[in-house]
Image 1: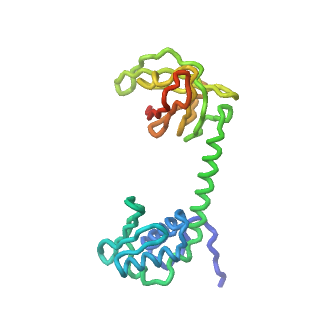
Image 2: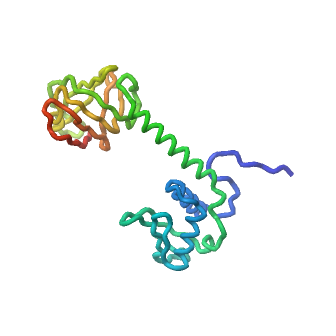
Image 3: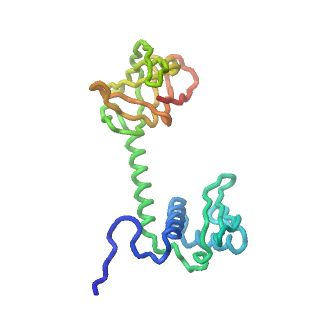
Length: 235
């Protein structure tokens, strides 16, 4: 009989743990990997908290809170900050090292971390010439060289809003950024601005920047020499 080797993505088939238990174990492996904690040491600390009510592990405090349907619930904190809360079946806590066989989770977390670092580096280095429609969560530093006359428009929600287009420039190119309502007066021509978490769209055949609810527009330098301020933006 031929032995089949799992080569697909995600959780290997045939795990000896029920699906819910496996998801909890995957979560613990993911948490320990993100925190840079040895998984075996992390699990042993959870077992210690199960037996004694409380334990510590690499700056984390682990407490057993209560029990529901045979499942102790654990609370992990770092100082006053809640890091995680989860239930674990008692039969898992009696196992020697149930987190041992989850290398695929560790690899997934490390890959995601590398990609995040890479995107952050690339976004920090972006210039206007690098922007393409469809790009999301980009960061950019540029100078305001023009602001159009504000216009009043009626939205699909029957609300009137005022908008203006600010033209931004760096040494490579130019691009328009839409400003809404009171934020129009928050920037001036010749201001140097830092934009965070913006999206690049194509509007009427022209490439433009849009800043959504989680975006930021920060004036870092300008002719007025006012203190630096941060402006939350929403479309």
